[in-house]
Length: 407
Image (tube, rainbow, N blue to C red; front, side, top):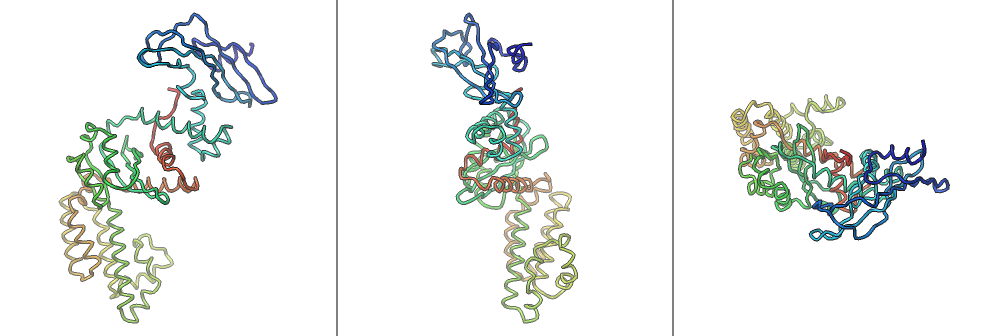
C-alpha cells in the first residue's frame, strides 16, 4: 500500500478532493498531505447552493491529527466562487469548518484536551499557540450554543458572581434534562443584565418558564416580572440563612459590648460556633457548645431561633410553610432581639416567594454550586484578565454543550 492510498483511508471521504501526494520532512518532524481536485468539478455557492463560476484558487493548509508522532498538515487548492447575492465565497471543504485552520478530527481531540486542563497546558500538548487553542474553544462554544435545545427549559436560577476586580457578572443556570447547566453570562448584576438573557431567550421560551429562583434584591425580581410575569418567584433559602447568621452574629457582638463580665467571658472566641449548624459542629467543640446553647445568653436564644427556621424545609406544602412561618414569626417578635426581628419583618414581605420553594423543591443551591465551580475554574487559571474569555470558559466547561465538530 503506497502513502497516498494509506492517507486517503486515514482521512476518509474527502470528495471531490483526493490525496495526490505525501511528503515527509524528517528534520521538521512534519508530514504534508497534498490533495487535488478534478478540474471538471462543478462548484456552488456555500450559502445558497447555486451553481457558480470560479473566481480564483487559494492554497490553504489545515493542521490534522498527528500520524506516527509527526505533525500532519493537509494542503489543498480551494476555489473561490463569485455569487451575486453573497459575494465572493470560499468553497467549504469536507474535512474542516469554514475559516478554521484545523481539521474536524483535530478540533474534536483539542476540545477533549482543553476540557481536561488549562488552555496554556493544552496548547503545549497539542503543539499549537495559545491563541489557536482559544479560537478552537470559542468555535466550540458557538457550535454548542447553536445546537442547544431549550424546549424543555422550565426552571431557572439567577445569581451574581464576582470573579475579580471589576468582573461582577450575572450567571443564569437552567435545569435541562434534570441537570443544572450554565445558560447565559451577562456583565453586571442589575435588572438590565438579566434583561439581556430574556431577550436572548425570546418571548416564546419566556412563556414556558414556570419558576425562577433569585435572591431578595430588587433587580432580578423586577426583570423577571417584566419578561415572565406568569412565572413564580422563589427566594433563595441560602440567602435567608445568610441573613439569619448575620443577625445572630450581631446579637453576639452587642452582647459582648453590653453584657456582664460573665457573659463576655462565655462569649469570648465563640463567633464561629454560632454560625455552624448543630450537626456540623466539630466534635472538639461539642461539650463547650452544649453549655453555651443551654445558657441564658441572648446569643443562645438567637441561635435557637435560627436553628428553628432550618426546620422550615421539612414543611410538606405551601400552606404548611405559611403556618410554620407564622408560628416562627411570633416567637421571633416576642424575643426582643432586634436583629432577628428585622430579618423576620423582611421575610414576611417576601413570604410568597419563600414558601414557593416547597411547591417546586428547587432553589438557588444549584446556582451556588455553579458559582463554586466557577471560582475553582478561576483559581486554576490564576485569574482572568479578559472578561469575555471568562464567559467563554464558563459556557465551555459548565454549559453542558454538544461541541463535537464531527456529527
